[in-house]
Structure formats: C-alpha cells, structure tokens
Image (cartoon, rainbow, N blue to C red; front, side, top):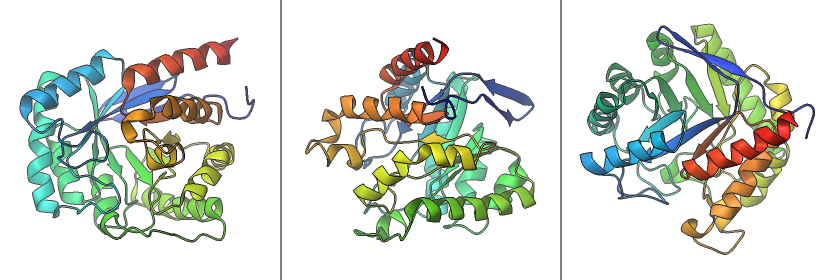
Length: 286
C-alpha cells in the first residue's frame, strides 16, 4: 500500500455530536430529480424516495446525499426559491423515517441550504465552491454545519467543452486553498474537499488530477478528501459504454482512490462500494 496515503481517520461536528470515522466513508446518492445523468426520474415521489433512502441505509452507507437538481453538463439550475421548495420536503421526509441518519444536501445556493438544514440536514455539499451564491459561505458559517468544498470551472448550464488548464492540479489546489482561507475566517470548522471530477474538466484533466490525489492528500491533511467518480463520463466515455454499464470501471477507480488517500466516496452503488472498502481495509491492516 502507499505508506503516505493510507486512510487517515477524521472527525466532524454535526450539531452537538462529534462523529469520528476510522474507516473510509460511503456517501450514497439520492437524486430526487427527473434529469440526473444516471438515475434521473427514478426517485421523484415519496415512496420511491423512501425506497432509495432505505436501500442506501440498508446497504451500509454512512451518509445520504440528497439532491433535487441535476448538475450534469448542460443541466439547467433551478432558482434558489424553487430548489428550496423542492428540497425541503425531501429532507423532512427522509429525516422523519431515518432520525439517526447523517444527511447531506447537494446544493449551491444558500436559501435551499438553510431550509434543508432547518428541515434536518447535517452537511452542505456545494458543487460551486461558493461561486454561484455570494451568501453561501456566510450561511454555512451561521448554520454551523460541515461543508463540502468542490472545485468547478463554470456552471453546469454553461460548462466548457474544452476547458484549458496550464497545470490542472496547481489550479485546483489554489482554488481550494483560497476558499478554505475564507471559510476559516468566517468560522466554518469542518471542511471536506472534492476535486470535482467531471466539472469543467477534460477527460485528460480528470485522470491527471486522479493520478495526483496523493499530492492533494498531502497538501490538505486536515481536510477529508472526497472522491466522486461514480459512473461518470471519465469512465464511460473512456470505455465507449453507457453509465449503466460501467460498475466495474467505477469500482476499479474507487479502490485506487482509496489507495491514494480518499476518505469519502460519493457513490450510486452503495453495496459494491462497501464491499470494496472491506477489501481495502483488509489490505490496509495486513
């Protein structure tokens, strides 16, 4: 195993609870939206949303990540008010049935983030890194919740087809460092980082960043590293396949991400990821 990139335990504070993780964390995706690239339209009513939440919990995920707006390239974002109206009841529904679950909300606007936390969410997962809403960082600080800071170049509805980076790792790390400074200055305590695979990056950029995850892990030792590659285009386009045909490719990248220091995996396939982590832990402790 990579001596410098084996799993580092970490803790986050959610409300009055200090949660410690001594094994890689699985974040199960619950897309309550009609147009997500892989599972759009499957979970749009109460019964299907609860069925998916149950599957995520039963298969062993640590976090349920709820989103109601697709962030795939070309997708149209909702207005903050419309997103809040859609997100809040989903969070309330899941929380009412799973009172002990750890819930994150996938949103890039402060209004739905606030409404979701008031409805029972624990974590804000922001694909924009605070770019789309100037009030997001202050809102997270006021809510006193953990925050997932992701790198992106451009909005989903205006994503560049051929983004250019002189040095993609350097630019991603600079972006994260700059925003971390602002978040800490505002008093945000727990910030997880996500390099943002597939967000304003070419396929080559995605694999360059992936291959240098150990360096990112070294540069940000106090910020848990989240990797979200589940069934993304960097896999299915490379393999000339469809998103529903690349579970094996997803699992292969997830195992390598763990070896490179990833501490959180955001996934569609919870059961298979939990099994991957079990194997990784056996290797790590051998």
